[in-house]
Length: 289
Length: 238
Ligand SMILES: Nc1ncnc2c1ncn2[C@@H]1O[C@H](COP(=O)(O)OP(=O)(O)O)[C@@H](O)[C@H]1O
Ligand SMILES: [Mg+2]
Image (cartoon, rainbow over all chains, first blue to last red):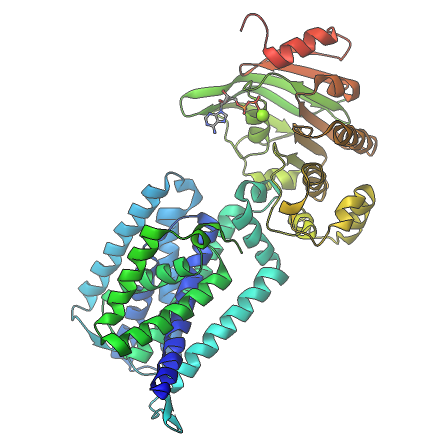
């Protein structure tokens, strides 16, 4: 029992690490725009489908696939930014959200047009058997997920507090009009934030599909939901919160799957989203960072 | 003297409502020029239009000989005009020092000495350099907003009601800084509600009422109580 608990917690943390990455991407965009980009997940799905297509057509190396997934997500993310969120399309938050929903549908149409099967195999990261440490088993993918999340958090922190772009990003997040008056080219910062968020999302997508070794069009909605949920748990708009929210969501899912069966996994996520929306706890609306 | 800033027939609207209905005014090189007027006259709208945050519908803004109407704000800062906005608008969740760095965002040269100089001018900011700007008092935030604008080394400093909501002693300090900056060669275009203080430092002033300039002159040209009456209440015609 105790061993199961430890094993589940570890598996949950690893899955949570990829949720954390999804949430970090989501939060970066939400922080500067104060808008929810529903097409965040579908853009990631687009990148992962591009990688899947390459793997079927050229029988590819896993790192090349990572590159394709990131590149595809970035391209799709740029398309979303230009069409829905670029500052010359200023307007209501609702309009931007509806527009991002429309692009979601576009991405699903495009991938199902080119790859119409419901499910495609994706090459695994490693062929190796899980490492056995005593009674516990350790999947190499899990370690890669955790390492990637850690590396990205570290790099982001340095970027935010040590670089010129980081300064601009924090300024735009904190007070957009003041940032413009300080001479920061805000539209450019917004585009770059979108690219950065999409790249991180693409990495998260690759980690997830190469761990699950399959891709479906559901990946789009799934990524938006997990990213949004983890961001909400961590307090809207806080990057450290997004990481904690992602890890917490992963652990929660792993335990509820153990106790309540595999169907409970996503059910719990939807239930949590419902509870958070209805309850709207104080920490969710006040935190900054 | 030549005009550093020339505003001609400027119209800026929020939707269908025109807040500026054809504004004309000049700011002379090396002067302190003051804009007075009652609440809602359009003073902030004018400042935001000059700074590029709002786009004018019609009209021209020439700054240092170039047309800048409709340019994005960062281009206007690069051209040498910086706005200290109404209600200060510091970056509340960033440190005082980071606020100053943000003000120097466009500068490619070394600005460490500028920060040192500003810290001598505003010793309170030096004491609080690692504190978050949101934790400063109103007066300190105003000093920070001015210091941030100065980090871009502007030729023209636009100030929108810098004394708003501050204690009398702090207001005096703000005006002392304005005269010092002027002596250092910065041209200043100042929006004020505090007509008494403003008329003491300005070489030229404008009255604005309901989106139009209704008076232009030197501080002696109109009795102060008349200026104050119109600056606060608008003229009887209104
Ligand atoms: N964001 C806005 N949307 C619509 N109307 C506005 C907005 N800001 C200001 N106004 C209107 O424009 C007019 C001028 O406002 P403003 O420039 O703030 O005046 P002042 O700074 O002289 O007090 C006012 O009638 C005000 O109600
Ligand atoms: Mg005003």
